[in-house]
Image (cartoon, rainbow, N blue to C red; front, side, top):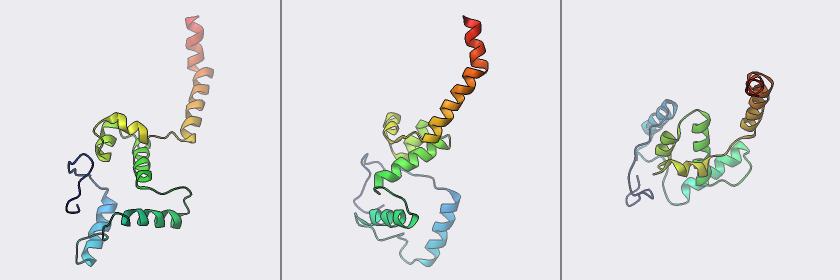
Length: 131
C-alpha cells in the first residue's frame, strides 16, 4: 500500500484475487522496474475507472463506490454469502452490505415467475388443502 495510507478501519487486509488477474499481474511485473501497477495519487484510480467506463460505453457516473456496488452485487449473484462479501469489501458489519445491494430487473422477473409457478402448481394445491 501507499506509505501513510490506511483504509477507514485503519486495518490492513488481504484480499484474494482471481487466477486470471494473478497471471496478468505477474506478466505485468515482469516488464516493470518499479513494482508499481500505476503511479498513485488521489485522482489516478478515478481517471482509470472513467476511461474504462467511456471505452466500454457504460452510461452513468463512474466513482470508486460504483466499483464497490458492482463487486458486492457480482459476488451476491455468484451466490457468495453476506459474511464473505463483507470481509472482501472490508465492512465490519454485514448490514453495511445492504447499502451496496441492488436487485436487478431479471431477479424481480424470476421471483414473479417463481410465484406464478408456485401459485399454479404445488403451492395452490397446498393452499387448497389448508382450507
